[in-house]
Image 1 (cartoon, protein in one colour):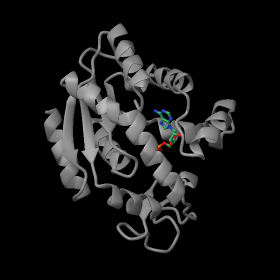
Image 2 (tube, helix red, strand yellow):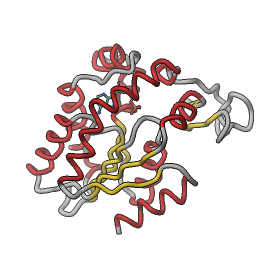
Image 3 (cartoon, helix red, strand yellow):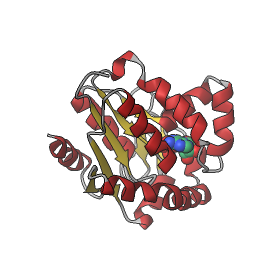
Image 4 (cartoon, protein in one colour):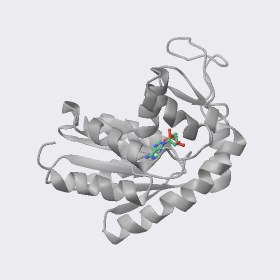
Length: 217
Ligand code: AMP
């Protein structure tokens, strides 16, 4: 990575819209959006050993072990397109991962630019996730808030949409429990380091993105 790369971490429970915001922000900044969940799903689609192992945790809504996740992410950060920075989505999710990220950045004379935390009430989160539909190409729809033009097919390429295995109601509740136990401590950690900026995740997608973008300027 170059000096003064922009390294943003998007924090927030599943369903707060952090993925949507991370994609938009990365586009505006002209840097890659890196989602560890997407990386695991790509590995699974390609049936790599890493993907098959990760799926055993993902399908239960559990976190993939730190060692596997950290190794995969650090390898991704070393790719050329990360030169000017990255928007990280879904990483770090544990204190161990946060410390690993900071020590990696330290080793290349970089530091986190900002940790954006999106807050959304839990009742809304469950509603958002259980109505979520995805396309193979990565478009995200919602049965109520953002329905496709034709039920349940992608607007762009007409391919059938699917629901994520881990978006089922009981798995969603488990993911939220795990988030509280493992990821909430990160908020305190980044707050203590003066890196945390909090955003309200309820509202117009573009308005929320403007706020995050402006906070970076
Ligand atoms: P996501 O797409 O971010 O909701 O992630 C889907 C699933 O991938 C999670 O429920 C975890 O099983 C796994 N996963 C994604 N990111 C991480 C991470 N940083 N650490 C451990 N597991 C992860």
